[in-house]
Amino acid sequence: MKLLSSALLWTMVCLSGCVHMASISTTSIPVERTKPVEAEAYRFLFLMINFDNFYVDELTRDLASQCPDGRVEGILTKQEDIMYFPAIAHAVRVTATGFCVVDAPSEPTPPSTEPQAEPPPTVEPVSDEMAPAENGP
Image (cartoon, rainbow, N blue to C red; front, side):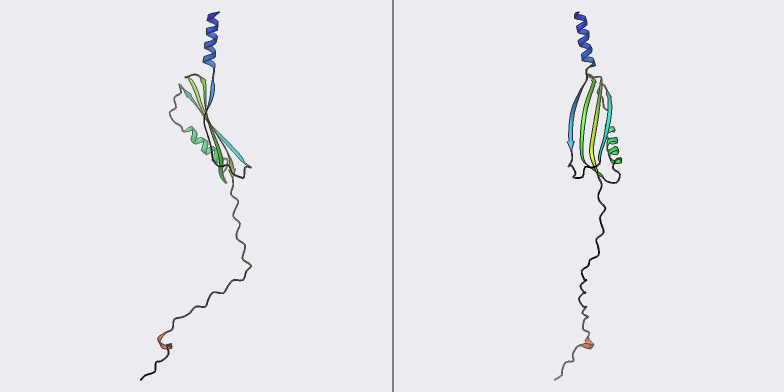
Protein backbone atom coordinates (compact mmCIF):
# COMPACT_ATOMS: atom_id res chain seq x y z
CA MET A 1 0.00 0.00 0.00
CA LYS A 2 2.79 2.40 0.87
CA LEU A 3 4.50 1.60 -2.42
CA LEU A 4 1.27 2.27 -4.33
CA SER A 5 0.71 5.65 -2.64
CA SER A 6 4.34 6.64 -3.27
CA ALA A 7 4.01 5.68 -6.93
CA LEU A 8 0.74 7.58 -7.21
CA LEU A 9 2.26 10.66 -5.59
CA TRP A 10 5.32 10.48 -7.84
CA THR A 11 3.09 10.12 -10.93
CA MET A 12 1.01 13.13 -9.91
CA VAL A 13 4.12 15.24 -9.40
CA CYS A 14 5.64 14.19 -12.72
CA LEU A 15 2.46 14.57 -14.75
CA SER A 16 1.27 17.80 -13.21
CA GLY A 17 1.64 21.03 -15.12
CA CYS A 18 1.03 24.63 -14.43
CA VAL A 19 0.73 27.93 -16.24
CA HIS A 20 2.27 31.16 -15.04
CA MET A 21 1.50 34.59 -16.47
CA ALA A 22 4.88 36.28 -16.71
CA SER A 23 4.06 39.72 -18.09
CA ILE A 24 1.27 41.84 -19.47
CA SER A 25 1.65 45.11 -21.34
CA THR A 26 -0.69 47.36 -23.26
CA THR A 27 -0.59 50.47 -25.43
CA SER A 28 -3.17 53.26 -25.68
CA ILE A 29 -6.60 51.95 -26.65
CA PRO A 30 -8.02 53.73 -29.72
CA VAL A 31 -11.50 55.21 -29.97
CA GLU A 32 -12.24 53.15 -33.08
CA ARG A 33 -12.38 49.49 -31.98
CA THR A 34 -14.34 47.94 -34.82
CA LYS A 35 -11.70 45.58 -36.22
CA PRO A 36 -9.89 43.48 -33.58
CA VAL A 37 -6.75 41.56 -34.56
CA GLU A 38 -4.96 38.78 -32.68
CA ALA A 39 -1.75 36.81 -33.09
CA GLU A 40 0.02 34.14 -31.07
CA ALA A 41 3.59 32.81 -30.93
CA TYR A 42 4.47 29.53 -29.24
CA ARG A 43 7.78 27.85 -28.46
CA PHE A 44 8.37 24.44 -26.86
CA LEU A 45 11.50 24.24 -24.72
CA PHE A 46 13.18 20.97 -23.78
CA LEU A 47 14.95 21.14 -20.38
CA MET A 48 13.93 24.82 -20.24
CA ILE A 49 16.66 25.82 -22.70
CA ASN A 50 15.81 28.68 -25.06
CA PHE A 51 18.41 29.50 -27.67
CA ASP A 52 16.67 32.47 -29.32
CA ASN A 53 13.50 34.54 -29.30
CA PHE A 54 12.94 34.71 -33.06
CA TYR A 55 9.50 33.14 -32.68
CA VAL A 56 8.24 36.48 -31.37
CA ASP A 57 9.17 38.18 -34.67
CA GLU A 58 6.46 36.11 -36.37
CA LEU A 59 3.96 37.63 -33.95
CA THR A 60 4.58 41.19 -35.11
CA ARG A 61 4.48 40.18 -38.79
CA ASP A 62 1.20 38.34 -38.22
CA LEU A 63 -0.39 41.39 -36.55
CA ALA A 64 0.81 43.69 -39.33
CA SER A 65 -0.50 41.37 -42.06
CA GLN A 66 -4.00 41.49 -40.54
CA CYS A 67 -4.05 45.30 -40.92
CA PRO A 68 -2.41 46.10 -44.28
CA ASP A 69 -4.16 49.45 -44.86
CA GLY A 70 -3.76 50.89 -41.37
CA ARG A 71 -1.93 50.51 -38.12
CA VAL A 72 -2.46 48.30 -35.07
CA GLU A 73 -3.19 50.20 -31.84
CA GLY A 74 -4.31 49.24 -28.35
CA ILE A 75 -2.00 46.22 -28.30
CA LEU A 76 -2.29 43.94 -25.27
CA THR A 77 0.50 41.36 -24.96
CA LYS A 78 0.54 38.41 -22.58
CA GLN A 79 3.41 36.01 -21.97
CA GLU A 80 2.53 32.65 -20.45
CA ASP A 81 5.04 30.11 -19.15
CA ILE A 82 3.64 26.59 -19.38
CA MET A 83 5.28 23.71 -17.56
CA TYR A 84 4.14 20.29 -18.76
CA PHE A 85 6.63 18.18 -16.81
CA PRO A 86 8.73 19.92 -14.13
CA ALA A 87 12.21 20.83 -15.45
CA ILE A 88 11.78 18.66 -18.58
CA ALA A 89 9.03 19.98 -20.86
CA HIS A 90 8.36 23.70 -20.85
CA ALA A 91 6.70 26.12 -23.28
CA VAL A 92 6.28 29.84 -23.74
CA ARG A 93 3.23 31.40 -25.38
CA VAL A 94 3.00 35.08 -26.27
CA THR A 95 -0.41 36.42 -27.30
CA ALA A 96 -1.01 39.88 -28.73
CA THR A 97 -4.41 41.45 -29.39
CA GLY A 98 -5.12 44.89 -30.74
CA PHE A 99 -7.31 46.93 -33.05
CA CYS A 100 -6.75 47.78 -36.70
CA VAL A 101 -7.18 51.52 -37.18
CA VAL A 102 -7.45 52.82 -40.73
CA ASP A 103 -6.93 56.54 -41.19
CA ALA A 104 -9.76 58.28 -43.01
CA PRO A 105 -8.62 59.72 -46.33
CA SER A 106 -8.10 63.42 -46.06
CA GLU A 107 -10.75 65.41 -47.89
CA PRO A 108 -9.57 68.06 -50.32
CA THR A 109 -10.27 71.58 -49.16
CA PRO A 110 -13.24 73.06 -51.02
CA PRO A 111 -12.60 76.19 -53.09
CA SER A 112 -13.14 79.38 -51.17
CA THR A 113 -16.33 81.32 -51.93
CA GLU A 114 -14.91 84.57 -50.57
CA PRO A 115 -13.70 87.09 -53.15
CA GLN A 116 -9.96 87.19 -53.46
CA ALA A 117 -8.30 90.43 -52.42
CA GLU A 118 -6.36 92.19 -55.14
CA PRO A 119 -2.63 92.26 -54.59
CA PRO A 120 -1.20 95.69 -53.75
CA PRO A 121 0.13 97.66 -56.73
CA THR A 122 3.81 97.38 -57.36
CA VAL A 123 5.84 100.55 -57.06
CA GLU A 124 8.59 101.00 -59.57
CA PRO A 125 11.72 102.84 -58.53
CA VAL A 126 12.15 106.36 -59.88
CA SER A 127 14.97 106.69 -62.43
CA ASP A 128 17.31 109.71 -62.77
CA GLU A 129 15.66 110.79 -66.02
CA MET A 130 12.31 111.26 -64.32
CA ALA A 131 13.67 113.07 -61.29
CA PRO A 132 12.72 116.79 -61.08
CA ALA A 133 15.34 119.22 -62.35
CA GLU A 134 17.10 121.36 -59.84
CA ASN A 135 17.06 125.12 -60.35
CA GLY A 136 20.51 126.59 -60.75
CA PRO A 137 21.97 129.78 -59.05
